[in-house]
Length: 421
Image (cartoon, rainbow, N blue to C red; front, side, top):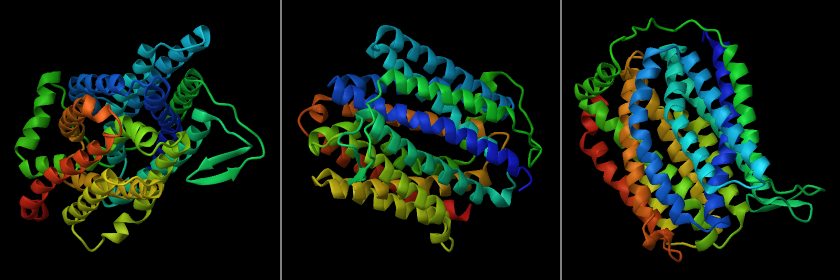
């Protein structure tokens, strides 16, 4: 891999900013659900925020394909650092944070995600030789999930602090020998903002030679957006594969941001350590996928492997909906970590091999827009009083399984075309 040093710097920058982002995005749903007791307000707000990212995602795809990915990363991190540090400064000044500013951080992070991850994978494709796509995706997944494990552990401590010189993590009581005070939300945001600044320094050091010559389309934004749609219209099999294989990710994001906190606090009646431990168990499963998924399915076609992972996820969600066991909840967190991360590695590698780098950003933006619309629909559905009353959140898990089941049908019906391609 001729751009190995550039790839390592990209991994380091992604790990540092992703660590603090993970803590912030864990803290916000818990803050609304368990501190303010306003899960319905947050779910509805998240739905509107998700819808607002649709137009931005389309535009983001044109930016990714039009401008150097390194510069795109620099601008993303500069904007993120300014917003997080500014909101944190308000918290330190007032001694509290208005809900509107907390939602601003959530919204800005969601907007950043909409361009950050497509840029990350497009940049990875640009600096990686074709034969190394699978290896590159696995390394990105391993790094991301190792970071998530650390973020989950740190989030457990920062959200609730520790008592009796110990921390309850992964269902285990781990002695520390000292206590750590709970952090305020603005302190967490300041830490998040600082990591953006560190990422800026690392990205500035990246030097690389593109693995393949890239043709840059310089038409208007509208013309470039249309190019992405035209490409997928001419490749309907890719369109169905790209959307159906996104189903687990759609449900996972809705679960993490909207369902996880009420499921733990109301249904399991557990504390923040169970909430954050679920994130760590998820990361363990995803880390396993990063290390082993390519070996496990090396003799099987990508499409068949993804169908199997989707089926396991459906069964896991249905069981989670009708049980009240912390042990099973942790087991499910590992399961969806394996299936989501495994699907992402296989999915991205498949798309890399079928979509040229000069249009990958715009094609990805089409998938992202549909993904966002589906997440918004589920967010509004789960904001209904039925799902926020009592412990009816379990039915949201059942609905998530049914949602993936619906997207399994295109994978089955178009299996032959997808495998022949």
